[in-house]
Length: 209
Image 1 (cartoon, rainbow, N blue to C red):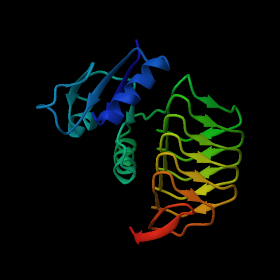
Image 2 (tube, rainbow, N blue to C red):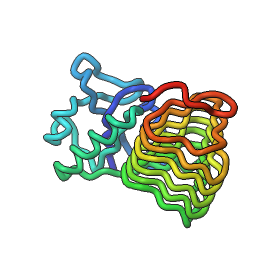
Image 3 (cartoon, rainbow, N blue to C red):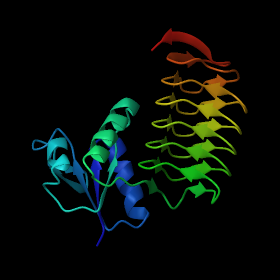
Image 4 (cartoon, one colour):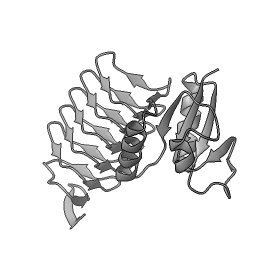
């Protein structure tokens, strides 16, 4: 019997739980700082907060995945767990398509309908959301989130902690810097510097992050 602990009992966490069960985990349980007021996340128990998880209290488990959508928070929690010697795992939904020649970093989550193509390289703690595609030779740094229905063409580079919004698309060979927010439905056709938000078709900088 393999049990997965999920940190973060949000809607995103529920999708992680469902993906994990589809991927062959037998049970899941949640840890969230809203505990003890929050006792369940839909079908699944919330058994403690982050402090209890760090002490491995509340439930037996074999590994942890951080089910928090915000990139900087997810990476910080992963670093703390790793520092405490708590094993992290990735979750890959069986309805995704992941090339045998792709590399998936520790603590990443690949949801149903996603496609990761040959020689794509994902850093630790990435999220490739429902129906998103990451094509050949892309390089995603740690903590990148590719939202539902977003598409990266080949040889795209995405920096640490960046977020590509729902339905956005990125032209082949483009480099997106770190801590970038790409708006929903944007079309990124040229390189994007660090620490900015871009929106529109073609995508243009609208503010600094």
